[in-house]
Image (cartoon, rainbow, N blue to C red; front, side, top):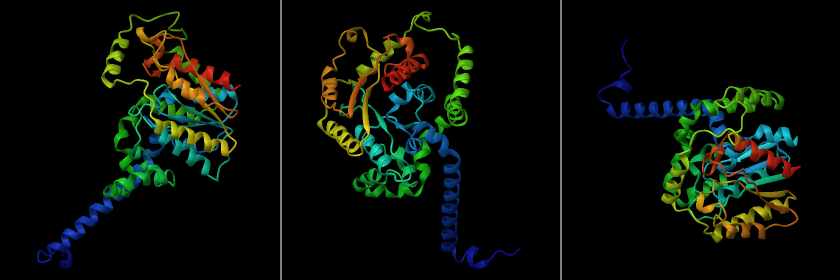
Length: 336
């Protein structure tokens, strides 16, 4: 068959270049759409953003600390409340403010009765949490969420506005999360099992673990060498009890926003593993003093602790399965 000379003729190479470029753009667009639709539910299961924007009586907002420490299904079962979770790894109080702002301005769903805001002992540190989580939230902007927050980034970096053309730009760093078995199991159990079914699944899963239904506190494993590694990580990053006034201001903005809507705000400090020189005093009393000073009739600060045993932790700032259950039950008792 003779090829159309008006496109493929060697006399018109520029047309071939134009058609080739348009074909590549169209291909990328189609792949982007398919990838976004296929992978977004798992992506959101990792970030916990879209789920936090749905109707819930209790909204939990924070970083990976609260996501690792909290068992959503268990909290729902214990409190009888519907629970939503907004969790972006490393998000600062600035991003958390925009999460609360975005959720409360939605008119399509009722406002929550309570908001639990993760306020770890490092919440005011100027460098611990990332102010710019735009690459995580890019996909949500095109779903009508976080437009104000992402636009702040584009105001500072107008040369990068082209990134918004492809929503899966924000999915690029998360493919390992999509294939993680634990993430997939959590996605299935939390979205397709009722509370009772989930509790039965949890009991069944624990019977098949290495130490079935036994507490690591009463049946301790072999010597745990991980705390020595955690010490080195802490030395590397040098996190301390510095309080950044800008972050305190954003917490006050969250307080003002929830107060204007008549929503109770609970500031929850999750546990960190305390090293030998921190058992009696971890050096963060000044941070807790700031959090306590913000308490009022509608703002409550609570510090939840678990036994200082490394077997309850995945690392010095994130709980393991047994520690997660302790934390969730303690929070549920406080809420009830």
